[in-house]
Image 1 (cartoon, one colour):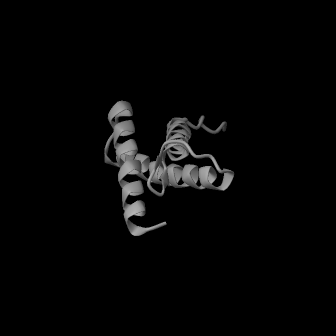
Image 2 (cartoon, rainbow, N blue to C red; image 1 turned 135 degrees about the vertical axis):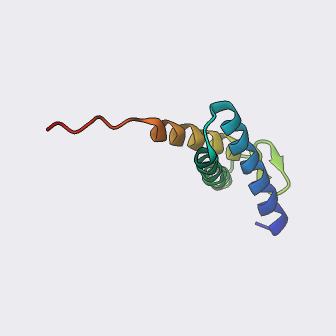
Length: 91
């Protein structure tokens, strides 16, 4: 992947994470969590799309379709896992 494609991928993933933060809310830690989750999901989604040969919404060297789906899946799962409460230990 070229440097411009990587830069554009980070920009798209950051936009997805920021939009998710805007919808779900939270503080600075949540924003950082959503950005990292979005970057990971975007990369994972792009990798799965390329390795499987799925071409959907290609934007230059970036396969936006699978990358976007991967980003939002990882964001949703990570958000769900981070909001689960651990029950108190029985004594």
